[in-house]
Picture: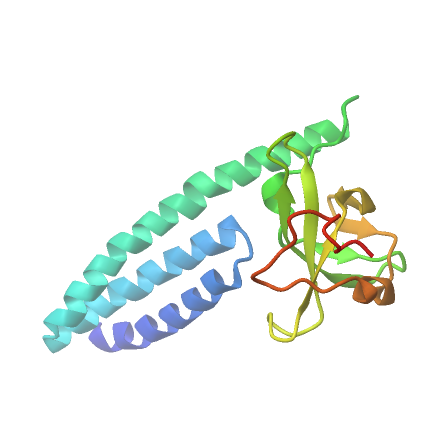
Length: 195
């Protein structure tokens, strides 16, 4: 049993780390914590079999942390995502304006007028005075955040839907927009950031 656990433990830990780091939604992250739990339990078996008390203590504690992760991501967070998705779906077939889950805006691909991806929406800024979206930050270029360029866009330029977000820009037009610094976003679109 100890030999099997010694193989499962590192494999499960690696797979779980990729699942949670990828941030592909509440359910994938939650299942990542399930796999982490399998790994930490296997590490406990290895620790018991080899007499490594520190390894046993550490992975016993990590098993509790992983259980918290399972509850948060497969329980609470997935219910929130389901609630937002259900409201958006019902609004699409009702005689009301279609709703978009605000939590799902970040991470959506931005599709240009030619149907090709331009970049990814990474965040949005809301006006506190009237609770409307002030601007959306779009990342384009680069790989994994390295070499990316950030641009602020007016939310009125974007149509949010089930398949992502669409706009009437092409890649050249987006790239011609002013680049904003990762740590210094504009206070408004009228702050010299509108092209």
